Length: 225
Picture 1 (cartoon, one colour):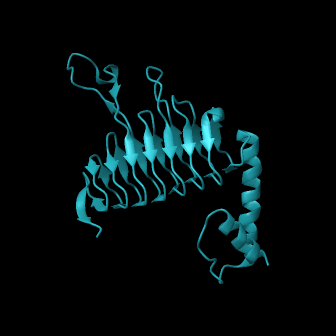
Picture 2 (tube, rainbow, N blue to C red):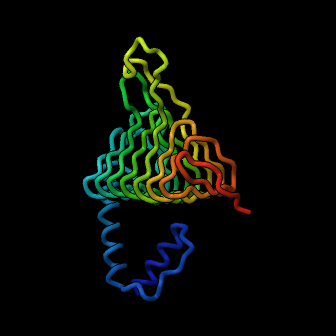
Picture 3 (cartoon, rainbow, N blue to C red):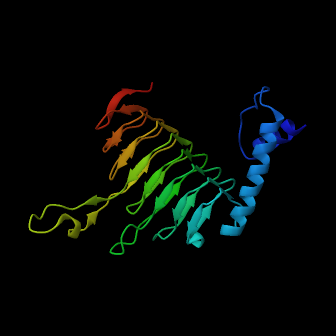
């Protein structure tokens, strides 16, 4: 009975998979009860129907646009101080122990994060979003991902690097992309739709659609036909 209820809830939320018959009812009951507590916590912290984990902090929650079924797991620090709305689409998920930094310095108000529908990012993600991060729909990412959407200027040898300010182009990740664990995205990079990024890659260029990319720095390994 509980498995059937859970399946209906999944289908209602847009999930299309079927629950494995081997999954015990106790695991489903634990998941449902945990999600219930997360929803209550999200209502308290944001005033919206958002699933928020234990010890997660959300700053400037009024600057967020939450889709349906958004999950922000436990022990996250989410900075909503940005010049644009922070957008988390339907069923978007941010893994545990992740950090979103929208404004890194008082000399420049940051742009923040926009994340599409059905996109999920694993635990220990670092969003350095001062220069802007755009993630499309149906993007799945492993753990220990980092985004760095700014560069320090260093062209003037008469000044300290830390006093020369920063430049930013932003980071854009397309739709339907799989990103392996421990990938680093650098400012200015663009990943086209329907692509795969290999674990451990350092992504610093512009990559076309239907590409498998990997390496340090990342390059196109082959195309997806």
